[in-house]
Amino acid sequence: MSNSEDPKLNSRRAAGSSRTPAPRQKLRSRRDSTAEPKYAPRRTQAERSETTRKQLMDAAVKLIRQNGFGGLRTVEVADLAGVSRGALMHHFPSKHELVVAVLTYVNEVTFTQSTRRAQSARHDGGDPIDSIIKDAQDFFFGDYFFIELAIGMSDESTRRLKRETQQFARQTRFSIEATWLDTLISSGIPEQLARDVLALTLSVVRGFSVRMLIENDPERFSRLLAVWRKIVRQHIEDSLPKPSRKRT
Image (cartoon, rainbow, N blue to C red):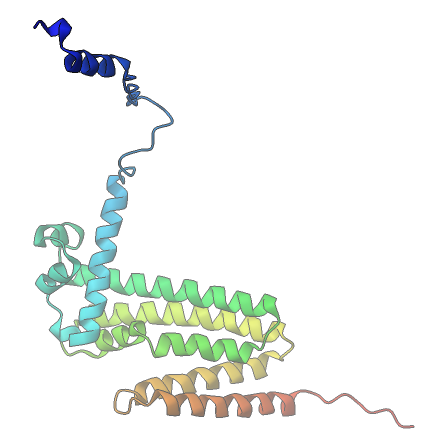
């Protein structure tokens, strides 16, 4: 029997010829502007360099906070930052240059944060005393204050480095205090009273932060700061001139 006479074979051929061929998928051109980018845009050399610098400075801050200035080792800084020793030496050829960069960095961050908070307190019309205490807590209880303290008081710091640390701290803190003084005066507090309140408040918070070196009790410090808020508010109220009463 020939293949043409085989009914089963003819049936399979008929079924195969009746199938609709699958549509061909349209290939997306690499030049197709609607295609989604496969990779994120590459960063510039300057951006990569700045990222590496910040990683190194952040690592140095953590190590100084953890081990003190005397325990700072540049090899450990590079390891913690996840960069090579050569990359560290490219950005900071010496330990001194690294530490000066850290001091510059922490003071710039502190100044920016405090200035923004002072301006916000001035425009929002809230209690400036609360804002001053909060800002002082963030600095004096944070890493940056202890970094400056560790560098400025370390026996391993050179005279030059201690002098530079003091200069950075004085310039930044005095500028921040001037901004807060303007905020207090703009709230209606006389200048001399505002100066006294600001100096006392910062001294109280700074004292608690140093106390934390031997007694870490945040709950107690918060309670005492709440007491100070009441004291300073009462002092301001008592110091402001009372409105004259009209005789009836």
